[in-house]
Image (tube, rainbow, N blue to C red; front, side, top):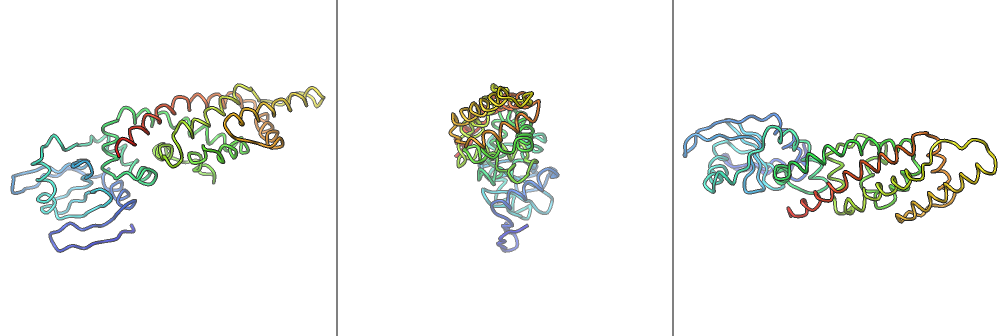
Length: 302
């Protein structure tokens, strides 16, 4: 792990990581950490991994000798007695009710969020934990709705590369960027964080564009080759290309006639194209409102 270490005197906390490295440290230690009970000047106290206090501090891994915790963008290693004296007892004195304890189920989920949510949203580990804890139902819906979208976006990239390229060059590009170089293993947590990154636009503007284009193409029902090579078949093809151009233009995507024909050829090459586009629109239609709501929550956290 790369880190800038600040070695304090014996008996003081030691900074071991900052930023993304701090998030990585929490993600590595928290899932396997176990609670310990230690003696203190106030009696026996229990240190439970997944505890959040002061809204920006998270207990990642306690032990009898050392404690590792995150505070804002930083990650610290402290002798246990020092941590208890300087951090834990003051937190308890401010009220046990102000300390949030993640459940094992919540820890399992948030451990997969720390890295991507720090990378795309610049949220500290503690803030990610609180965001999930305080909005668990909404987060569970988003995490459940995302995999079908990822599956169909991966299909679009493979089966319809010309259409995907046009969408990737539009406002939707940021949410699709993980797929541009063949990456088809974007995790739901990472995709959600990417979609919530306001630098790329609101979910309604980014993933919403994919939704509307997919719905429009689904309605055109371009699938399967038209029998014959006569003038009527040619006219059907050209009409489909013009309709496709109009569908994309409605979303601010201008394509040349030749590119429109190429996209139509890709769509016609597969019998399931219309149903695939309609299904992509359907799953995006479920996910976009959830992400819009979540974007508001993230913005509200400051």
